[in-house]
Length: 308
Length: 308
Image (cartoon, rainbow over all chains, first blue to last red; front, side, top):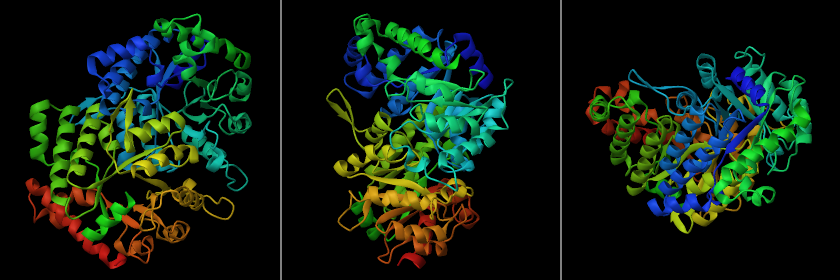
C-alpha cells in the first residue's frame, strides 16, 4: 500500500488525508432532518445521516486527495448501526479510488490481535469461506503492549499489501506524560520510534519506504525532527494540523528531502468547512461538500510551502 | 460499580471474571451447524452462534461468578453483525445480574474519547433523545496517550457509577518491551501505576476502593507486588491465569490483606472447558455450558488458597 500511497500523493500533489470523523453538530440540517423524519432520533437515523454526509464529501474530494481516515469512535458510539455506516463509508471511499486508513488505535495480543488483523486489514475465514470485513488499506495501532501487539498484523501487511501507523508521538496537549519520559537518555517516543523502524524493516516498498509508519502529531515539531532521523523511511501520519493549532510552517521537518515521508490529516477543517468563517459566506449549508473540496484545495496550497 | 463488584465477589466467594471471548473453534458442532444451515458460512451465522454459545454459558455461571468480560475483538472481526452479537451478549449478562467489563482497550483523546466514553460507559444524546448503547459497568483502556485519553471517561465513572481498568502491566510475553523500561529509577508500568492511583482518587467507593483499577497480568508476580504498593486501593483485573500459564499460587500478592483488590480472568479455561482433558470425559459437547460451570467452580476453589 505504501507505493500506492506515494503514487497517489504524487498524482494529486497533496500529502493529505481527510479525517472522516462525523459529529452530529457537523451534519447539515437538511440531511439530519430527513434522517430523523424516517427513523426518529435514533442511532439508525444518525448512521444514515453520517453515511450520506460522508458520501457527498467523498464525491467532492476523491480526485484531489489520496486518502481518507475515518475515526471509528465517532461511529462505534452508535453501536452496530454506527459500525455498519463506518463499513459502508470505507467501501464507498475504496470504490471511488481513495485509500482508507482506519483510525482504530487498537491494542491487543495473541488471538485477539489476530482477530483485529484479519477483520481490519485482511480476511476472516468461516470454515473455508473467506470474507473481507473492514476493507482498510492501513490502520492505526497503539504500541504500549510491545511487539506482541504489532507482529500479528505484520504478516497481513506482507501478504496482503496492507499498512500500519503506530502511535509514537500523539498530538494531544498531555501526550508527553508518558511519551516524553526519559528512558536511558532518550524519550519513550523515540524508543518506540526505534521499534517502529525495526518492525518496518520487513515490509519495504519499491520507493524505499516501509508499509509500517508512525503517528507523529503536528503539534510537536521538535520531536518530529528527531523522530524523522530515527525513522528515515517510515511514513508519518500527522494529526493536529488546523483545528488543533499546528500550521504548515510547523511541518517542515516531518517531510524528507525527497518531499515524501509524511501525510497530514485534517478532519473538521475539511469536513465541517462550511461552518467556518472563511467559507460560510461562499457556500450554503446544502453545498457543504463543495466547501470541503475548497478547504482541501487550500490545504494543499498551504502545504506546498513546506514539502515541495 | 466498585462497591457492587465487591459485594458480588463476597456473595459468590469468587474473585473471578469469565472472559467471553468466543472463537469459532470453541463453538460446539450442533450450534455451529444450525447457524450455518440458516445463514450459510457468513458473519451473520457466526454472530448467531456466538450469541447462543454465550447465552448458554451465562445461564450456567451467572449465580456463581460476579462478572463477565467480553473481548470485543472476537466480535468486531465479523463487522457490525459481530458487534450486534456483542451488544446482545452484554445486555443478556446484565439482565441475569452479572456485571460486565468490556475488554475494549481503547485509546483516544478529546471528542473521540468522549464518543467512546458515552458509547461504552454512558449514554449518547441524539438531539435530546438519550440512548444506552454498550451497557458496560466498566471498560479497559490503554494509557499511552496520557491523561487526555483517560479524563473524558472519569466524569462518567463519577456521575453514572461506572469503572475503568487501565492497562498497566499486561500478561503477554513481550509486555516488558516498553512497560519495563527504566524511567528515572522505576519501571514505566510503575509510573503508569502511580498515575492510575492518582486518577482513581476522585472515585472512591464506600469500601475504600477506587472505581479506576489496573490491568496487571498474572504472569508477572514480582511486578504485581510493587504495583500493589503503588496502587493500594485500586482493583487489579488479572488476565493470564490458566491458559496463559499462571497458577493460583502466583497470585498471592495481587490481593490485599482484606482478601480484596483483585479479580482474576479466565477465558478459554472456562468457556472451552468441555474440550479440556479434565472435563472431556465427564461432559458431552451438548453439555458444554455445564463444563463451564464446573470449571468456574474449580477455579473458585483453586483461588481460595490465596485470597481467603
